[in-house]
Image (cartoon, rainbow, N blue to C red):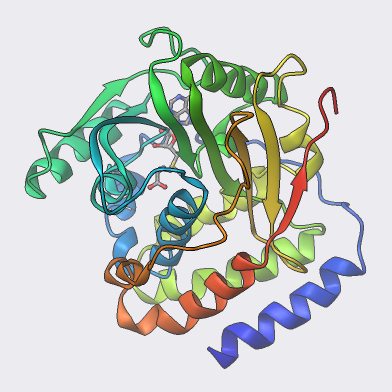
Length: 307
Ligand SMILES: C[S@@+](CC[C@H](N)C(=O)[O-])C[C@H]1O[C@@H](n2cnc3c(N)ncnc32)[C@H](O)[C@@H]1O
């Protein structure tokens, strides 16, 4: 815990003192197809990456106006860039959205995801399809209650692709539905980016996941800046949009689109979310506590129409 706190404070000071100097470098492997990289991705729940899953589930529950307790089996979610299927099963298990469709363009990932879901006995509620997240023509307009994505939008080759993904997300999201895009935020300098990868990735290397470590490095370099992320929201949107990040050093950012009737973005009365500890191995509970508390006090920016 103190190890993470020390880095968080020093990186926050360096972030606040710098402007965005680091340019984006496109991922060398746009789709995760390489066998070793796919395999390493199946162990993410055993790594400190599990804290990222925890935050993702935490925020879905905080922004959703549906109750987790009275989960409704008709509530439909699509998970864009679903990878090994882990986050799709977590959504099904720990959020109000039970019918999950995961889409990915990598056949290797779809295979792994199908196997994973069958092992978990969640096959009835979760399915996967091969589909490009910038062209969701398999799905009709307004057909989902939640359109979400975890750490996939930085895989897109250009800003135009990001715009297409968000446009398509809005098209398939129903009027009262929520769009929730969760991804990395590019650090301001190369030093900060490389230092962050070493600091967070040390655990990954220790556990022998060197392909995941490399993937993590490329992901941080390919992440969108805040300005790039928010400028991808369509000007003619029917949703109210928000951008969320932590104060100081924030390796994560979130873009949320909700209906005009949604009310406050974050529930004032938070449900009891202790179950999230089930997702995270005990050795990372310190990091979880720190991350949860830092992101709980997120900087929430409401985007202006035609921003
Ligand atoms: C970093 S992984 C994240 C996986 C998963 N969301 C998770 O966090 O466990 C990104 C995934 O997005 C997929 N992807 C990248 N570009 C895509 C596209 N244009 N359409 C569909 N999937 C894409 C990759 O194949 C990969 O499986």
